[in-house]
Image (cartoon, rainbow, N blue to C red; front, side, top):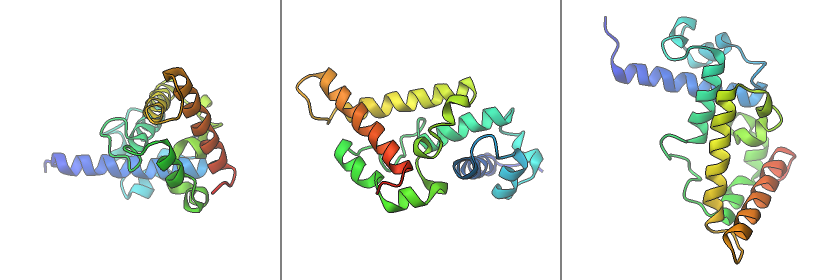
Amino acid sequence: MKISRDHLADNRRRILDAAAQLIREQGCENVSIADITKAAGLTHGAFYNHFTSKDDLIAKAFEHVLFLDNGESPYADLDLKSFGQAYLTKEQRDNRRHSCMFSALGSEISRTSPETLAVTTRAVKARIEKFSQTAPGATEQERRRVAILRWSAMVDDSGAGGG
């Protein structure tokens, strides 16, 4: 029996969603492929139809959550101030399973694979570029500096109990 493209895409999304949630809760090192496939309701073998390794999955899960491919982030169109109001909430702070990858895993990101680091770097640069467009400042350099400072403070504050 041939599996449809829609079914394969749904399985991939389920694995990515489960991985992203478990990685936020437990960290990259503490979650296994078996944990992820079980949470996704799939077999261990289904994993290898979509990913070559755990490192490959982690990088793709980061990319999936950070919305680098499809721009579906609920925060995508928010300016710096609006993002801060949506981001620094009690729910964001208390629900690590669905929180920001940066605040949930900030200290762990540096120990991930080169592919995950590249995804994360692209996401950070894109977020700063977006925020620089609406940050206060007379020059592009000043706006970029403000965007970096405010966003890094938000990530730190959301992980440390701000909200």
